[in-house]
Length: 381
Image (cartoon, rainbow, N blue to C red; front, top):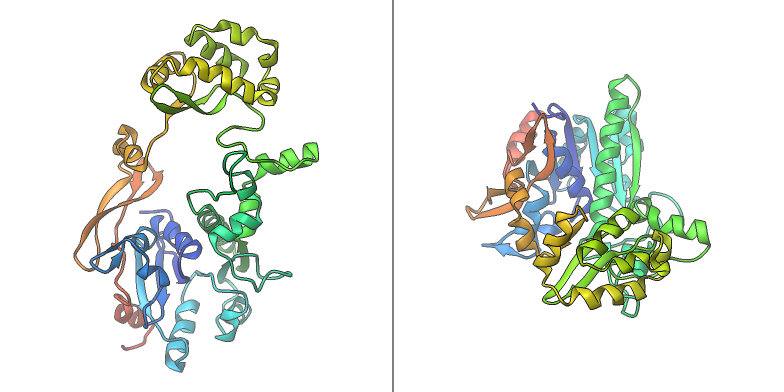
């Protein structure tokens, strides 16, 4: 029995932030019903890579869900959507503010009929305010939130994080907000309208950077892989490539210097404390790399691992997925797509009672469950 078994969630979402929220809830056992338009459904269904016409990307965030197709511009479809929403414990949507109100599917309208409804709106900038009506994509939100100002090499062009963190972080915040509010409803209190924005999510995880700004009055800058407050804490060049080293404390710094037989580095007054090493980390990098180029990465990893100094190879994703810990945790699972194609996906990394949260329902074909879902609310298809 998964923690959210018995919870019913209706998802009016497209692409990524909202569907990821729904995926997280479904992984925990919620019955997540994805409402899609009959003329193509979620836009993400068309995103590559396509495997015999079915999107691998769509499958990755829509596992464990059911799909119903409803035409909200048709009175019968709209009434079915309203009835479906009122049959649920929670509704999640990620359209621009005001769109759901046009259909009478907004929180204010639905809550009149069901005060206990938990209603979560995910958007780029929030439901109110001067930018509320603006749309946003992961990259543009990374730009406006400050993320791109601190990502990349100091003398390079601004770059975004390689992972769509604005979308996924907003989805995480939304799922947490939904579950928290469901707990409130369980105590007998009314539901609520939850407002989760991608911009807010980006600022919500930027404590390292905002603390630097508030504490010094200076904007953080791009440092590549380096850390503004600790060093050595970055990717370093060695003889056959790069590796990552995180020896930010005095104890770890001492151990790292001992490992490469350069205890004199630890005695250098420029590197006598974490703050001094961070302040002088360009010089520190040059000094260290003069030594590191004498070793291959595997040698340095062995040296530092033997001394308990945090370090790691710079893996590709295929290398990361081949890590023995990933295999042990069984985070990669085989799935069947609705068109019969077999592929693999990453499942939830969480465990409940020692058990992993895998795929118990394959990603749906468009409208695959329409008849059964409508029958559950008394509508014959």
